[in-house]
Length: 292
Image (cartoon, rainbow, N blue to C red):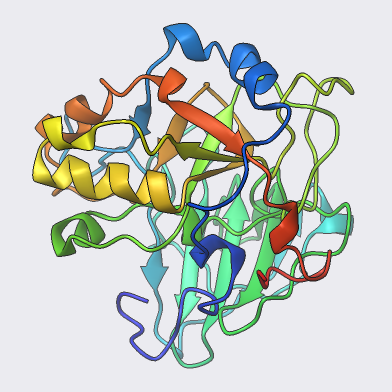
């Protein structure tokens, strides 16, 4: 964990950190790709330069001081949120900036306890902070949310382990799946997701928790070295559908160092080069993210 060297981003056997190169193609793969307009769509990195160096696109996170004040947060979805309190404050970075009108995710890590705190639609106020929903995770544990519970993400999954960071790209090694979105999803979820946000029950639509892999036959060698690092991770670890949004958007950290050339290059990868995989063989328990 950057900034918290004694904390893993979940155990090594967590599903986010498990390679899927040998998994079979899901029987619904072709239908899901059609529903996501894959024949006419390209990957879209949901991060990078915004024109404002102080507020790049992407989802920020912060490693807080163990002495950071904890505050109580009032939730719209209180029955599916962890009560807290949360190390949330006026200086906590929020997705899109302090005046953002989007998802406004806020992600905080306590390095002393290896606790991950995530908020959706986070709004700080000395008079009383609010959020749409919130979840607290033990980064050393594979425990999932209760069945049917959301998190700061529609799928009831943690956000942090699915974010691509520029430091990983520079290191030449990415060893986890990436978070992605789809416009329309099935009104059900599959492991490791714990919550759905679909419009209707339709098996031709991808469910929350669906995992997609860049085909091994896709030639990544024609891309730059940095882009190859990302694409090889997509071949080895893939992408996990975690929220509704634009088709084939995948998320990274808010970092002013993202090169626009890399972001533009990744936008040339066709979505048709992906396939959904069946990861049911990895599941050890519905309530655990540990992978077989």
